[in-house]
Image 1: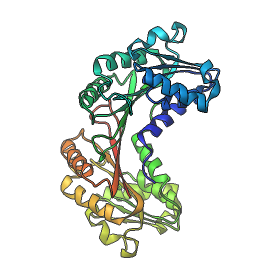
Image 2: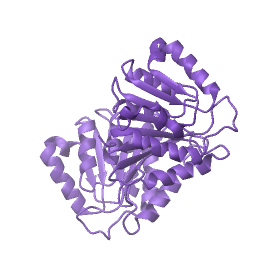
Image 3: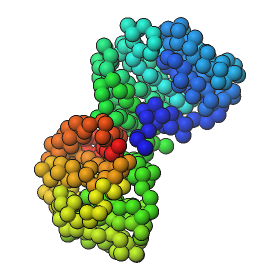
Image 4: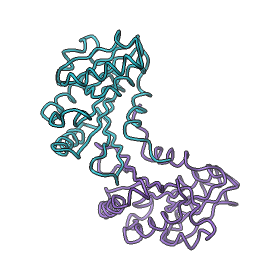
Length: 192
Length: 192
């Protein structure tokens, strides 16, 4: 049957920790797959905040949502800015109450491969995500190390995750261990 | 809620790939936890073959089975020999038909800590396990790198697993990434 894919496994981890009405964040909208998944999970009583620095990503996500979840525009808010700034967009009364934050690092498939996430903004964004989380909430990070700059970013995220104190956070790695360097893998951080 | 433990996750992977009546192997009986789990899964129409080089492990397993699964003695066969020799114990007609093989490396808790699994026998045993597997079958390997000799064995198993051809096997790593070096982690190999 094969093992559950990295993306599906991340979604499973989120599903069991998130309920309708919750607040969630897609830190890297990309082609909108995570945003659609999150929007379906929390529903119209919930709140989805999405971020990307490329207008193309917001356009793709909006198309996907309009097609598959027509009422999404009422509870999904997309921002054309770096995920570093997520705390200024998510309202203060929801800080510490976020159920899940998704990161899909690397570059946007089909777009400019020079535009990649970089550790200089990724690490502050991850720190912001942890501050937003509620107890029991989860940050999922899908990492790619195959592209130029990818292995440096992945190594920086690995170091960051490994140093998170076990008393406050639990970090899970889920990875196909004999795959090519192009294959994504998952780190997930649960706030205790 | 915390992430599913390494041992529970290994059991989940086995559960969805194993049915009553199947043949399975516990390559490292230890305190008998895996053997009991496997025996419950395959039931009295199935076959469980268990191995350990310490009589104490066979005794512990037998006590556990007798207490929790009184009819286990009719379909669980335990051998006091190295798991390298599993192909000589599992009948030839079941070679290539085994659903799952479990390895729990390191030393037996509560027993002599000088008696540890070592790569010289672990690697041939893993190769034997892959030959016994049916298509879709799984080998689970719980690794410890905290004890003397543990990190060398873990590194050797890692290298072996990483080199398995993706066309024939898929290797999954499931690991708490910010745990202490004493914490176990999982490699699972599925035969394609």
